[in-house]
Length: 228
Image (cartoon, rainbow, N blue to C red; front, side, top):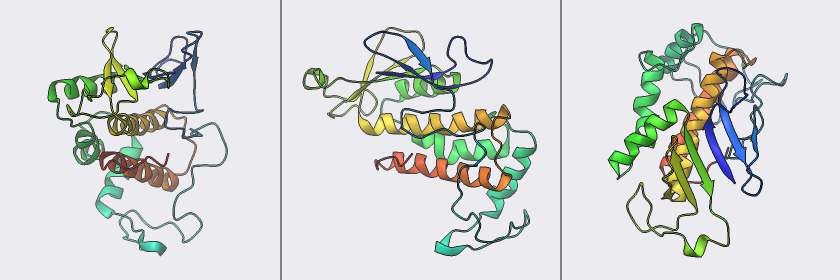
């Protein structure tokens, strides 16, 4: 099976998501608001119930400048929250916005930093342009698949391969690299839904969903399994 991050042919203009392509038929199905390759059910904008936040229904909403402590040690970062509120007035994915610049600096740049710096640069460009293709290797070919990760440049069991843009070159990648790329794409996908006005959740719930997706990038970077 093949997953493509970007805009599918015939999809709504400007809408991005993951495209699933059958390895048997070659037919493409654009999964708008349904399922990403990390198996996270994308509900944004299509259902009445917003994504759950970790503090939902526990305390009244706080003012933008108020630092609030919640149960289980969850607390709002006042600086990031202030930047988020400013960004939410005019959502963008451009890095000249302070909120987006912070996330690139703290999460995305480090998540997409690999030993093979030249290929890592190509991956970042492909992620931003929506032209990353990741394919899971079939069980029959796993034993014969290359054992060196193209991004980490170390011996690894590579259960995935990746193609960037419209080139015919496939790169063997390990689970951790796949997870890191997927986590970044899922985050950017959510930002695009917000920018297109497809997310109907409250500002409060959008903030916590962004926090959760940022946590997924940290988890992926540390080599832990995604929880999406």
